[in-house]
Image (cartoon, rainbow, N blue to C red; front, side, top):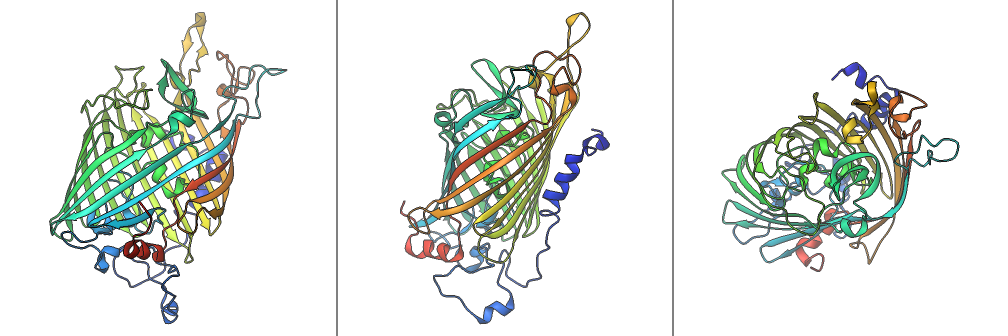
Length: 515
C-alpha cells in the first residue's frame, strides 16, 4: 500500500490529532510503587482512608489475585479467565488480552468455589444513513445507501470460573444476542459496510446481525509456575486467535453502536462454529495457535452451523505495561464467504490497545489502533486502519472513531462501464470519521443496576469522486453516494454497571448480584 496515498487526505490528519493525540499519545502513567496489576492511590491520599462502602479512586482492582483472592482448590478466584496469575481486568474476548488498567462493567458474585460474572449492552436507536443525499428529485443519481431505521443492537455474556487443584483454572462462557429479532431484513443500515449475505444476496451498506448463540466455550489453564501457563480453549461457537479484542468487548468502542467498517479485516471471526486454541504464556507474552472453521455464520441466526476445522491462525500477545496491550496475528481462512466458496483469505492484523485512569471514579481514557490486511479476495491485498478513543469523565462520555478501508467493486457492487459496456473493477479508498457523545442518566434499581445512557453521533465519509456518482466522476453504473455522505444516530443504551473496588469487595463477600 502507498503510505503517502493512505495519509494524504485531510480527514486522516484530523483523525490522528483527535484520536491518537488524546489517547495512545496521551498522558503518561504517573510513577508508582505498587504490587503488580494494581494502581494504588498517590501517597498523599493514603493518609485519609475512605469508608469501606466508598469506591477507592485510582484503584482499578487489577491484581486482586495477588491479595490472597486467587485461592486454592475449592477457593474463590478473582483472576483473569486466562491465568491464575493475571488480573481480572486483562480479560478480553475469548483468549485475547486487554490492558490491565482497563475499567470493567459487569456484575459479579461467588457461588461456592465458582466466580460468576455477567455483562452486556443493549441499544434502542434511530439511525439515518446518507441523510444528506436522499435521491430522487433534481439529483436522482445520488442517494445510494440512504436508509432510516429504528433498531436495537444487543448482546449479553455470562462467565463462570473456578480454580482446579493447586494449579488449574476452569472457565465456562456463554454469549448470546437477540440481533436477529431487533435487526430485521438482514441487519441494520450502515453506509459502506460489507460482508456476509442474506437470501442469496451480499450485504452492502448493512451490518449483519449476530447469532443467538454467539459464544459457547470452555477453557482450561494450567499454571506451571507464576510466570508460565499452558492453556486450551474450545468453542462452538468461539473465537480463534485472530486480531485484537473484538469490538463489542473493547472499552474504546463501548459507546459506539455501529460495528467498524474494518470488521471483516480484523475481528469478524469472533463468532466461529468450531475452534480449538492452544496457548503458552511466559510472563507478559502469550503465543497462541488455533484450528477453526473458516466459513462465516450463515443467515440462519438461531441454529448451530457445521464445524469444519479447515483454517489456522497464530497470535502473539504482549502487555509491556499495565496500560498497553499489543498483538500481531496471521490466519489462513478457508472459504469464509458463502457466495464465493472458492475464495480463501489470508488475514494479517496488528493492534495497540491503551487504557489510562484519570484518577477519579469513572474517569478514564481508552484507545485502540488496529490494522488489518486481507489477501486472496482480489488481485491485490486490501488494507484497513482503525483508530478510536473513549474519554469518560464521570457521567459524560466523548468518543471518536476514524477508519480507512479499501473496498473493491465487487464488495460494493459498484462497477464502471468500460469499452463495449464491459464492467471494470476498481479498489476504492473510503475514509470515515465518527464523533459522538453520551451521558449517563441513572442506574436502574440502584447502584448495581443497569446503567442508562443517552447519546448521539455523526459520521462523515470522505470518498473518491468515482463513488460519488456519474456526474462527479467516471461513468459508473447506478447511483452514487454523493459528495461527503453523512450519517447520524441517536440512542438510549443499557449496559452493566461500572465495577468499583467497593462493589467488587461487596460482590465477593456478600454474594453481589442475585443470579
